Length: 344
Image 1 (cartoon, rainbow, N blue to C red):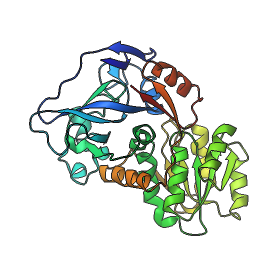
Image 2: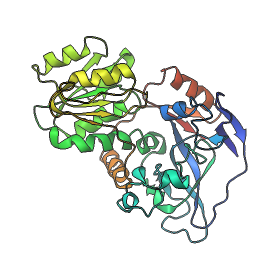
Image 3: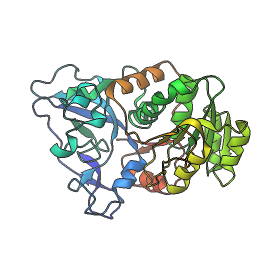
């Protein structure tokens, strides 16, 4: 089968022909219907050999949906031909976190060398994907695979981040979204669906700010040196009750802190290497700073339910598997508006 692989450190992703996978005991083989491209993949391909915790080559794609093609011995709970989404952050399944469905915070994954598909295990940028256990599959039903596949990360990750702050985001409050690309434009919609809060979106690209306005942002501002001051003006000097940074580079993490008000939540989701100092007098009183990772399986089900209710409009740019290397180049160059989706 064809697969898009990261084959050596420092190289660009390339198409390769690899053997068709066969499901072993308890495993499920999917015929991939759509796979999402993510900045996390770019981050992996930017690592040095010492930083990588898994061998190359690696088939990319940690956002995946497909139809069940075959079941390994003992696998049950899904039927051949059923359309399913893949829950990506695989864990051991038995530790304290996994017992709560929080495999994204598995306590044993690192020690046991457990990796998500596309981030250590062969991913979804291929004609077929091997899933280790049926518990990592969520039924799609009649949801469209192409518009739904980003929800497995670009939907689940902001949903998990926002859900923590929902109690603070009552009427009259403000939520700031920094970065309105793949995750950020979904976060805006989730905030509108889950809270009555006013949503202010920040980005450096006018095209992405226009997307932010289209999907529900009350205000869309250029992310520049005047952004924090403008937010203070819009909030009557209070600042925001919640700030979600989906970029995570040093300038945006600093901006996130500048936008926060007293008792605010600052959530650093982007993995751009930025950080935010915490200490008395550095941030407004009782500011909470978090750095979450992905989300739980039950939260993925909740995100898909929101999609079924028509509350999410995911902007995708579609590519064939042959075009996948170009999709990653455009993603690297910041020229994808929304989410890039590869259809094998």
